Each structure stands twice: as structure tokens, then as C-alpha cells.
Amino acid sequence: MAGRKPSLNFTNSLGQYTTTIEGAFHRLGTDKEAAEAQFKFLMRQAEKGFVADPNITFGAVADEYLDFVEQAHCSDRFRHCKERLQEFKDFVGDNTRAKDLRARHVEQWLSAKTLTGGSERLYKGIVLACMNWAARPKTQKGGELLPENPLRGQLRLPPTGSRGKEAVWTPEIFDQVISASSEAFRDLVRILAWTGARPSTVTRIEARHYNKEQSRWDCEDLYSGRSAQVKYVRHVRFLNDEAREMVERLNAKHPEGPIFRNAYGERWKPNAPQIYLTNLRVKFKHSKGLKWPKGLVVYGLRHTFATSFLRKFPNEIEYLRVLLGHKNYKMIFSHYGHLIDEHASAFKRLEGFNPFT
Image (cartoon, rainbow, N blue to C red; front, top):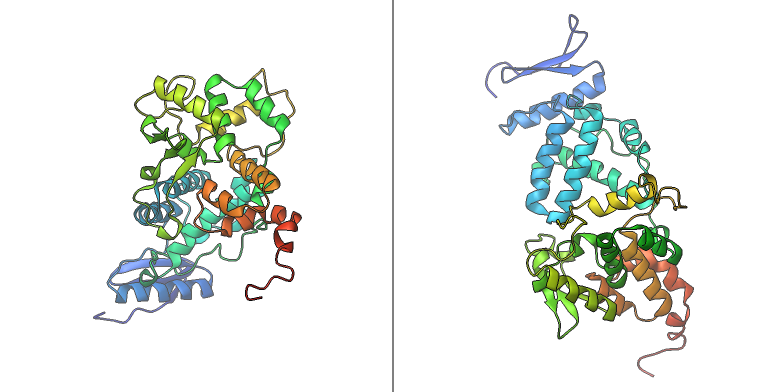
């Protein structure tokens, strides 16, 4: 940089630290340590030819992060990040600076929601991922928008463990939902329970995906373009007799476009199934007075499928991996390891076993 070397100064008239870099005047706040960190960050950016803004808003950071996610990750991840970050942006306001975010902002945002521990961790994780990316150098595929993440190490994350265990539906709740729901939602709930598929997959299934000869859906095209190849597997969904009968009925009704639709004959929007389930619990007159468990989620049907399968077939984890569409066993052991441990028979086979004797 040509000309006078920039320096960090305390401007008495403004009551805070300031600096001028490449003709741009920056106010850096009253905390000397934080001001020094921002000054060094601005200098590094200027040396690289970038014009940094130490007062960039969280909304601006979130927008740039979403551009990164859209290019680097699958559409489902982009959708989840966009929805959560928009909610948080609306909560903190358009003018909140990213460097001013604190853990209390995130906790207050989530305090009005009814979330399972797994969902709370996911929501917080999305905000943390956004801010971590913003503080990471571009050489490490970051945004390099902030000198540091002010939320780093400050948020209390629920412990990891069996998200499946807390989300499982009981037979009584399944029957209650079926009896209180519209026909369209009943079809959706039943197919999720019978296949263990993700709601985001089922709501996009079309008649063309049906492989009648193999009694399955071949829906690999729904995941095309996914950049996270380590998680990519060949996507098929097997159908039992009840599921096959339902699918053939809906295929005939909707030969084009999604076969699972809402009561108005329109495609289910991403969050609509969960919103409908929440309305059953807290809004609809005919059902809100029923006894509902806390944190009931549509995605829990996938965990219910996996839990029931493991309890019945504890030694057939490979089949479950295929049915759920996982690349490896990591997710299965993470969420359902407690069930595998309950069935020592799967491991007793190893007692005294030697492949060479």
C-alpha cells in the first residue's frame, strides 16, 4: 500500500478506536483488544486487494454464505440453511452487525420454538457454520468476512446421541395422527412409516420413479448434482405390499408430477408436512385437545422405521443401511447404537471366533 502507513488510533471526539485504510475510514469500537483484531484483519484484506467492512451485518454475511452453500452442497442442505438463517436474520433485525452477535441472541430465537435436542443442535449448527465460514480464510474455502467468529465456543449445544430414540412415534400416536388427519396427510404418514424414506424425498416422488418389477422407487435423479460425493449412494426405496398398492393408486391419479399432494391437490412444500402436524397438535379444533407428546416431528417416522427394524432384526444392520440409503454405518451407530447394544447376540458370534482356525 502506497502512502502513509495506516495505524490504529483512539479518536476522542468519537470515543472509540478508528483507522483509515486506502482512504476508507473505519470505526472499530471501544474495546482495544477487539479493535486491534479488526485492524489487523482490515490490513490483511487490504494487502490482498479486498475492501473489508468490519461492520458488515449478519444479513449480508448470511447472503454470501448461502451463495457458497448453493454451489458447494445439495439442494436440501441449501433449503434448510436458507430457512433457518432467514428466521434468525428476521429475529435479530437487518441492522445487527455480525461482530455483535452473542449466544443470547441464538438462545432467545430458539426459546419460542418447540424443538427436540437434535433439532436444537441442528439450528444452532447452521448459524455456527455460517459464522465459521465468514471467519475462515478464502484459502480454506471460507468467506474471510470477519476477523473471528464471536459465537465460537459460546453456544451450548445439546449433547449428541440417539436422535432416533427421542423422535420415535408410538403405535398409539401413529393411530391418533391417522384418525385425525386428512386423507392426503394419512397417505404421506403411512408411506413414510412403511419405507423409512425422508419426507423431502417422498414429497418429490413421481410415477416415473416406480419400478413395478422390483417393487421399489428408483429415485436417484432426485439427488443428481450433489457435490458431497462422500455421502452419495444409489437411491432406491423398497415398497412393501401396502406401500405398493398405495403407490399404484396414486400413480394412476397423478401420472405427471409428484404423486403425494396436499388436500388441495398441490405439491407439498418443504415445511408443509411438519406445519400440518403442528396444527393437529395446537390449532385444529377436532385434534388440539388430544394428548400429544412434546417435540413430535414428521421426520421421526424415519427413526421409527429404523428403530423397529433393528429391534426385529438386530443382526441385519447391512440391510438397514441399504434401506435407509446411508453410505456407511456411521449414522446408524450414532442414532441407533443403543438398540444394537441391547442385542448382544449379534456380537456373541465373535466369542472364540478365529478366521484361521
